[in-house]
Image (cartoon, rainbow, N blue to C red):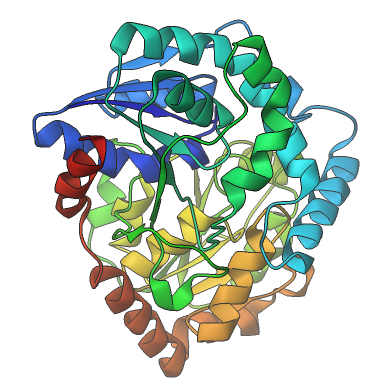
Length: 381
């Protein structure tokens, strides 16, 4: 079976899809990833064949990552995230419009890749409209791959009108292909309606060498602090300064991950900074995590059973923080309210640690990616 994976140009869309791509490859199927931007080199480093479908496009500019002052970008990011939360996690018209623009910029390259490969099956990131396009063009099924806790059974139907110009340009009827879905969060935590396969989330955030200090003997608890891969480019890392200064009041060691942390000035002696460390490997040797509420960070913490605190800024982060609150398997707070007492509670609340273990069990109870390969092959015919 030949399977084309296509997704928006972002690590947060690629990383959740890597385990299924590798499950298919390990079962002997051909896989090609069609994407662009930062996801291209990340897919290559994951050992996956990949084609850059829009190598001349600056997607940071398309998404407005560097437009205006950081404080204004942060305010707009928050407004959009709060709108998603008010919408019950469902994708808003503004998000559809932006990703339809991204789809159009990528569509020619995705169509070329699909015409060359002639896939039997397409797997597309949930906002990659080019997956719907090439599946309909070639008359093959496509599988919408989830990235977090939101399940929208009508997502493709609501997205389709925004893709009309792209479909018309390629001479493809504005109709949905045969469509299935894969979700990666446990059913007990999903938000929204829809059907499809529910697959175990397997943490992946890029391969790499763990520094010696990660596995060295520890005398105190370790807390990881991160804003993920996208947010620092949008809002900067200044919001972490209060968190890391508060860390000085806690009997624990803190590891802050991200670019630009040296701009924060002098930090307490119990805070170590690093630009990047493989998150799953680091969390396996840690006791708690403070993060921005991104789906990848939230699910990775759940997968290793760690207490977590979400400090949502925008996007789907308020929705994910709400999941932690509802199931009591994590804390959520505004970044400005974080102090030593709250960080201490994250480390030492026995009920919170027990609920984190419950969340780990919920994830582990789902079928591994390898167990879905047969169903996908049957779908492809």
